[in-house]
Amino acid sequence: MIRIVRTLAFALLFSAAGVPSWALQPTKYAAKVPSSIQTPDTVETRIGTLKFFDGLPNEDTVQKVYDNIDFARGVRNVPDRHAGCVGLRPVQGLRGRRG
Image 1 (cartoon, one colour):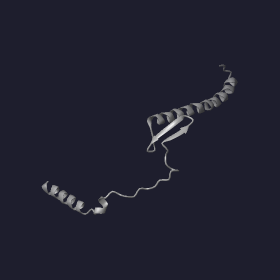
Image 2 (cartoon, rainbow, N blue to C red):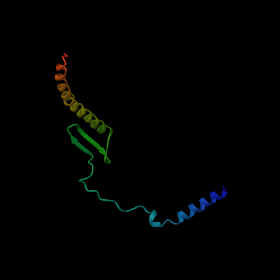
Image 3 (cartoon, one colour):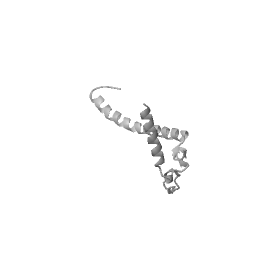
Image 4 (tube, one colour):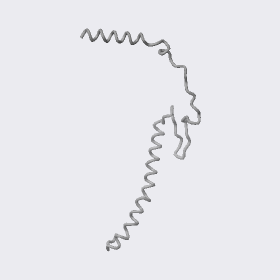
């Protein structure tokens, strides 16, 4: 047990001593991101103002987008279901069913 601890201590000591000083300094490079691909802080849309912080939407924005997706799916559901009902009525009529 002592041998393992001693080996680990030496490994840690030698690995820390082998790090060059330039690797410990903070980097001075910062990429200049073009403004054309940055996410703006606010975006005006037909569902309202969407707000972002560091490219991430806030809770209100997320809720607005999910509500819009639910609404769009509901609107799309009407013509999808209507086509099935229109095709079913003649079949029911041929079978003699009413209603």
